[in-house]
Structure formats: C-alpha cells, structure tokens
Image (cartoon, rainbow, N blue to C red):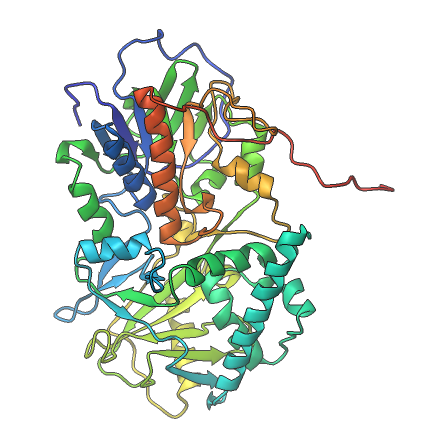
Length: 519
C-alpha cells in the first residue's frame, strides 16, 4: 500500500520475537522525515484501543498494519456447518465476561457490545449442567458445587496472603492448604470445570495469588454474568466497528507480517515480510505473549535481558474448541455437560449450541480442551482427534448410535504463527517485578522507563501493550482493552510533546528477598 503523505501513527500486524544482531548504523538523521511518528503492532483489541487513545489525544494520522486478512486479533469467527446449515461460531474470544454490578464500573467490552448492537445471550454454566463419567450419565453435581466452594476458599486465602507480603505458590499448593484434595475422576473433572477451563492451565501450573486477583477483579468488579456472542457478524465486530468509527480505509494495512524491528535514539524501522520498510518515531507492540516468546520477529538491537526474562516468565495458555455438526440433536437438554474421564482434562467440557437459548436446530455441539491436552491434539492427525471425540461421545451415551458428523472443525491456537497460543496466564512463583518489566518500554539501546527507585528516564522507542501485560485482567479481552488504552495515551504524550513523556518503570535485575544459602 502506498502512503502519499507522512503519517502520525502506524499500527502494524502481528509478528513474533527473536534476539537480534548487533547494533547497526543509526536509522536516520535526527529529525529527518519518517513514514509515521508511531507504529502500533496489531489490529486486535489492544491495537485498536491504543489507536483510539492516540486519536482521542489528537494523534489523528493512524495506519493499522495487521498480519491477518481482517481486524480482530484473537477474536476470530468461522462459518461452520454443512452446505445450507452454516452458522457463525467463535474460535477464540467468545464471551463478555462481567458486565456491570449495580452502580459500579462497567466492563468496557460490554460498553462496546451495546454500542455496536452485538447479539449476546447469558450463559448459565452452573445452573444448567449434565454430568457424565465413563459409565454414562451419572449425577455428580454435588462435586461441582463442592469445587466451587473449594475455589472460593482458595481465592479468599490468597487475598489474606497478599497484604501480609507472603510468597506465591502454585494454586495446587493453595488448594491443599485450604483442604481440597481431589482424587476421583469426578472430583478432578469438577475442579477442572472451575479452574482449568477458565485459566487454560492446571492448578499445578498456575499462580495461587495471580489467579485469585484475576478472578476477583473481573467478576467482583463487573459482575458474574457471562454473555456469549451469537452475532452473525462475529464477535470481532466490536473491534472492526470501533476502528471504522475513526480510521479511514487507507489507514488499515492487512496481510502484512512484521519480520524485524530496528530501533535507535532517532526512531524505529519496521521491516515486513515483503521487504517493505516503514520508519517512525515510536512503536507500540501488541503481539501476543506467545509471539514474543517464540522468536519470529527480530529486534535490533536485542531486547535487554530484563525484558526477555519477563517475557519468558509468563505462560501462554492453550484453549481449543472442537466443533461438530450432526444431522440432529441426540445429546443433553442443558446448555453444558461435564465428562469425567480417568485421564484429567480429556474432552471434559461440552456445550450445546443447538439449544433454545443459542442456535436452535443448528445441530452444533462443541467441546473444549485446554493446556497439555490441547497441545496434544494439536500434534495429532485430525482424523485421530475426530475418532477420539466420537469415542468420548459414545462413552457418554452408551447404547446410542452416534453417526459421523456432517461438519468437524477446530483451531489449534499454538500452531498459528500470529498468536502461538490462546491467552496468557501466570505460573507459580509470581514476581511483581517481572510484570513491571513485561509492560516496560525499551529505549535506544535498551535503557528506558524508570529505574528500580522510580527515577524517571526518557521514554523508550519501543512500547508494549496486550492482555498479558494487565496485572488485574490478564487473559481477558477487557485486559487487552485497558492495556491498549493506557499505553496509547502514554505514547500520545510523547508524540505531541505534551506533559509527561517518561517511560515506565523497569527493574534491571530481579532478585529473591534473600539469597539461597548453603549452595
């Protein structure tokens, strides 16, 4: 795409991170004309929200350069079903999680949903649930209720540890210390339904403290209501309609993959897969955490060690929905079902879209797998996955003839080079300094932001925004919204030379409270 005039802002599509070569010559002569003043990488929720914040502050020349064929990021819809029975299903983000509690703050994703007329329906995960084990339908909803109480104790106990400054541990440690010890297949399935299905990782792999406040800040702040998107335009409409409100078509560049980001004291140069280069004063990266961890984009010079350590201190989770369409509905009458396999996490959660509240008559059933099991099926032939899924359904419904589906589809998010996973979560041993460094900007030669004592330094050339950087809302769409809005507003200060243009705090070396002794 040709840009006939200089632009104040340029947003680039998703790419990934690799450690770069040694520093080269300066990108340009100081104050030389550039293609843009700011490059914001990615056309998902964080990227568009960052662009809108810049626009609202007076930075009106914006171009979104997106790796995919449309805006939306991990909000991806798919036309699914046999010919003549196609429906829109959501492969990624699917729910407005939390709306508004009384006179409290409103979830901004819910605000956008109302603004753009998105069709949604409340999901009743616990009110309507049918349970199965390897012998067929068995009522173990009492275990599900118990798991909810166990989770409440886990969260409450974490809340007492935070003000005392007590160390973090795994959520499994927290469960054990608060009296929860699941052993049977039914108890483990109930715990999975409460924990893994939300965080994508098991209690062994998750931070006790971070999972607690992540849950509290979303559902205690906004409400416990979950609204499923049923809009034929797709959930991505929130991003696309919002972008259309302030961006011109000429300001959106699709199918453009970033391969290198080169930066120095004078600005930034971004190289795309087709060898196009774009220069700017600043860049905002909204790559997913998985992309940053994987190494597909070269940073030149290399990101500083404190930044790289922070990037690899978080976990990119896996969350895979498996869609099937059958000639007719043969399954449970409730919205959701839970299957207790002796193998924890093996095709446990099933949701009916052929339900009076959703897409009646669609014949669509979908299951969800997460974490290690999602990574497992990503490596298998699709025919084997289909056979395993059908075997699971035949176990759940013994004696019933279950035909081959008319349509079958799933998307392994970890295999997509634009994302490398579904969404971020904190592992055990959460360290606040790593979160600080994950958000921090990077300067000309890796020196930017504020030091550990909070002394301000000149803002960096490379900034970062995305759901992974949200301390309260990592993993949630509203986390991406808040991070994009905040970083966009901060960079606008630098673009316009107004007010405070200091970078964010970073910590050069993250240390233990006390050293290891006797080693």
